[in-house]
Length: 275
Image 1 (spheres, rainbow, N blue to C red):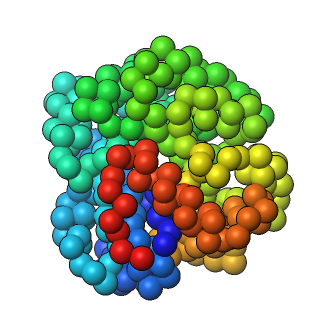
Image 2 (tube, helix red, strand yellow):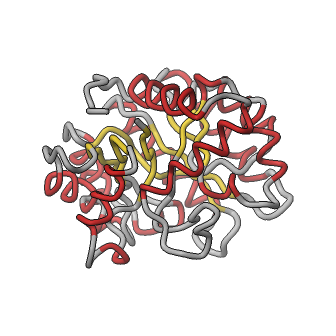
């Protein structure tokens, strides 16, 4: 069994065939999917939870879990009502994580200080609700400032909680991976690991401990080879898992078993999803 640890199931690109997408995932051996609750902005944070409640308890579909959070470039929209909404969502049993949250310096968007403040506010809520976090970190090409600022925040505001989290769609170097592991985070690899020019990411993956990794799609984006350029979907996470296994020099079944175990451990879930 595999788990897609990060998929945007609430994307409008699934409106016409969401159930069929989930059915294909189950047929491909995907036992669970973490549905990310950021939507197109804070007003849509709850859509991932709604999808969970619509499709859960179906033996022909994966088990669904949800997250909730405010994406870095949506942080200017944060106010007391948004924070209260986030707190309420994190209280729901299906909402097992806060995210994706973090810092994005790649795109022109929210000012960096606004992103930082919004991140800290969400860390405080997640800590109070004892929910791990899903981190988005993207610096400008060749820069490390977003990572440097992120680790400053996490060292001060998150390490003391001991709750850990996930470095989603990891694209950093070994130093960032090592620091993430030291903070109690799992490092999650997405479809970009399968791309021919991803040698630097292959090199990082090859050094990772099996108990420190996850796999994800980030669907509907970043479809792995040979589906690159198409709409991504949870079934495709199997392709990323195979490439990760090659990088680590282990059998694909070992990666499936390890990443599933890591997911359940981090989110303190019972490993009772069917094989």
